[in-house]
Length: 384
Image (spheres, one colour):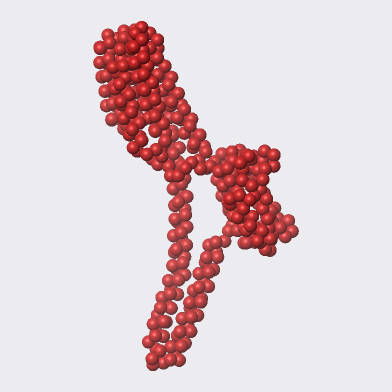
């Protein structure tokens, strides 16, 4: 399970879900490890208290690292293995150090065994997790006999509490895995759509050029054969080759122009859907009728940059996009409530290039804070 690249603004909800899942898992572990601490308070020997405390702290740190790895899909495999080896080492160390603590008065190590049983399903497949849990129960029984504790009590704590912790932990991680897989599915659909569009365009170009290039090749070959015996006809054939080549070039240019044509209404709808899917309430007001192709292309470029900034550079809860047409000028206003001190102004990054692009066509672009809101306003002429 991998997540490519850094978390982007579009993944803020996923990042929050990961933080909540990790906090819940760690809180559960730390709460469960308070009970071994009770044994430390009941142990009269200060040396055993010190050694047992060291074992509990090492165990807590190792288990926290394992839980962090369980909800961090981009973590390298070698670090996962190191976390798991660290937990195994801490668990083994806890047997001689924490096992004798409060012997006969409190089942100290049984609570550590319960957290191990609860963590096993996060690290191993079901058969291996069951085998590991059985091994932990065997160790619990051995510690009970070694320290003179109640065997039944030890086993009930390790097995019963451990099973409950395992169920809670597994459900939480399962939901987290579903969220990650859903995000990966969204990214896969985007890549698939782009690949399908490239294939469609490639097929269109092939259909346009395949026949024309075949005829051109045959005509050129014929002209080459006729040149020594019939120069006049060879010239006519060569002229036909030139005409066919010009016609093919014209058709390709028309296809590319149609491929590049921008439907601003579709762009507005797409950006609105993306923002809403990322938790931003978005309202869009489009102009009536079609806009000139050049104006639509310029505004679409501004719209994409504005949408990216809303997701990446702010914590907006709402966004409003208005496109108005008055006389010979079209104005698009993008307003959101995520203004911050570090919000880029009109002279930074992508906005600066867009401002220069619009200015070259007789338009303009302004962006900046308006109280607690960030407002971007782009203007393009109907006829550049």
